[in-house]
Image 1 (cartoon, rainbow, N blue to C red):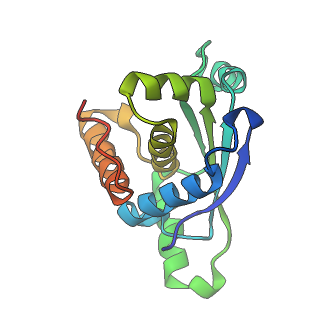
Image 2: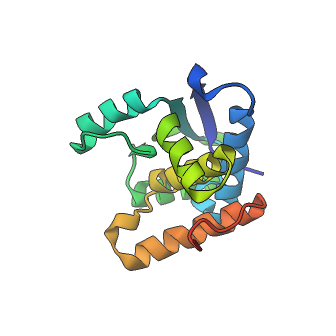
Length: 171
């Protein structure tokens, strides 16, 4: 399976009882299977499993929201640029130049609380948020309206189904 290349940094607070690296790679592969523009190993993503304090500071600095959140995505390219880059790399894979899609940051405390509220394992919720973040880096944005939100949720649901994870939006 072809997926973006992930550079992963896991804060010690996340623990080592779950293989976060493998979880992230499986999520990226499932996401790329449903969003073909992400099926490109020349695309690079920085993924950080952080704590609430770190994501709170980022959320305040970049979104003017003075609170932690579950996941932040910092895309480097527009949707059109992602599609064009993928098309160019597909046309000539031998000369595919690395493309930095952006950064994704997950917050442990918020993710853990949400997982508990949803009665799902932390690994399941984190998998969903990695997929969600990747779609944002590919230019999908649920805040642009109901149609885009529904389209993004459908991709997330199909990607999660590939991993045997139930649809998160049916609750």
